Image 1 (cartoon, rainbow, N blue to C red):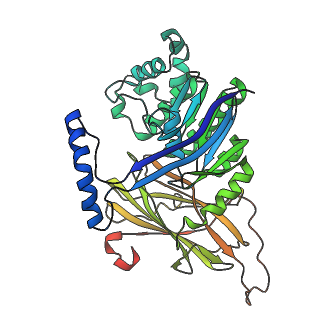
Image 2: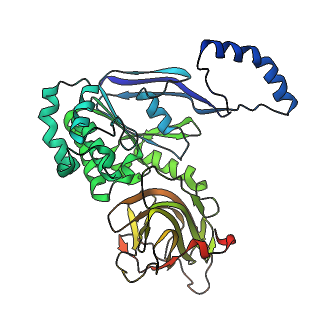
Image 3: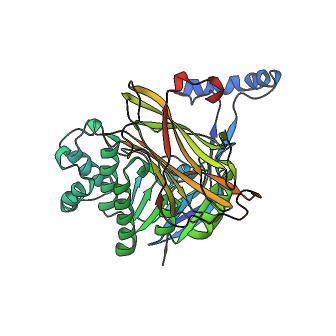
Length: 425
């Protein structure tokens, strides 16, 4: 194998203050003359108004041709910043990255698409950006459209596409126009489960069948282990582990114990996805906690927001084993009688599982929230909780571990957030 990507001591620094770049030479000179006086004023007020934040610092890495490399880490670890530097979206503050091949990147929904152009026009536009000739794009056109499942909308401006259609077409273009390097961020999380499986299969085909290089960012540890032989763990902008996928997943889960802080997880609103999750709570014996004694009652509360009023919100909770495979599924889709008496744009769904017989260990959790139209917000293995051992006089023994996929008879409750007390928010 030969090295196709060389990353040498990459660093990216951002300024968190209110200053902006000068828009003219005169403004730049004026700002430079004011700088000493501004600094004196800042010191007199007790500190600087402009803080520095290093999203990445001193990251070095070589990627071999044909390798599928997984990048994992908590939110804010620097994964997307690194991919943006490799994609030439942003310039590094220090260090350099050398790419020896044609690259296609999928960093967010609709990357590289012009909203006023049709799906057909955007396919040709993206192919041209990749340096392909029109005949090459035409050769792959039907395959791209079939993969994206947008045959009936291919001549519609993409600004009218749903987020799911956007991401299907964007991935199909990136994966079929023969890039030597394919970069995929967590954008696949807005697609449905079937489409995610199709994308994972295509990435495996691209890497194994065509010898192309894939950089894959995901919170889905099962997908990372299935697709990647080598993995990288990022934490607070630094590279903390390079190794096999299994080793890195184990280290990542250890780092992730603090994500579910006191049983409450805040979720950043994804652009263009509705309904979407805003907060998730892990309830142990009725109270928020990320540590569950064996034999305790377990429940999850999912707060959501939607652009349009809804009566029914589909919620699925999946609890995984440490290795990533699913253990327990719980969903309200088989309980159509429950919902809201009046349509709401925000609310809370509680999923009560009761006393689940888990053995001590760390258990990642995935959450799906969607509407009847099929639009879905997926948070795959987004947080975890830990089961801790305790003596239980009533049971007198260690409960048997759940070791196979099963639908759990959960109880779901729909609650209006505007009627809940402030202490429960």
